[in-house]
Amino acid sequence: MELNKRQTEILEIVKADGPITGEQIAERLNLARATIRPDLAILTMAGFLDARPRVGYFYSGKKSIQSVADSMIGMKVKDFQSTPVVVAENVSVYDAICHMFLEDVGTLFVVDKDSLLTGVLSRKDLLRTSIGTNELEKIPVHVIMTRMPNITYCGKQDTLLQVAKKMMAKQIDSLPVVVTKGDGLEVVGRVTKTNITAAFLSLADDHEL
Image (cartoon, rainbow, N blue to C red; front, side, top):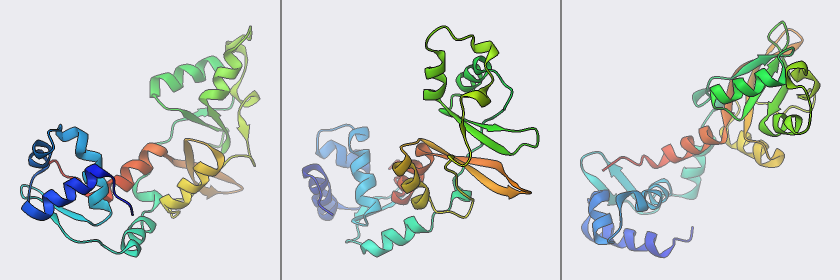
């Protein structure tokens, strides 16, 4: 792993004077604490630094890449998934837009009368349909949604790395978490890019020191 200039400076400060708090490091660099927070997270996650609440950062040497990789591989969807936002197939595009806005999400999962996954609606789908003279109150979402088998999904036991790879490959921001129910799939959660980012950053144990 190649460090940038500021990360190298932080490392030298901690080597010389650790344990040292994030505020003290920022003062040495004439920067705000918030400015160096990402650098401290990277250095901690990579194993160069360790952090302890009310103590500070101290130099720990470099952990093996395998150690960090093992921690990431062990992160399961079930431990980081969030609540899914679903709508019924017969809901209008207008109502779906309102629902997406009120729930502040980028993806809606569409379910049938048995609560089984049948489709996915993205912001792009709704925006595309809104352009022009379409009567949004009269168009049901099942007309414009992405349908099975073209839906990318994941299970509770999948790793976040597997999910991240799926998202990158499909260029999507969210996946439904599903379990098998009869002949279909029941939506029990969702995983977003924000969930994954927060999970990986948690490896850094970046306390406000």
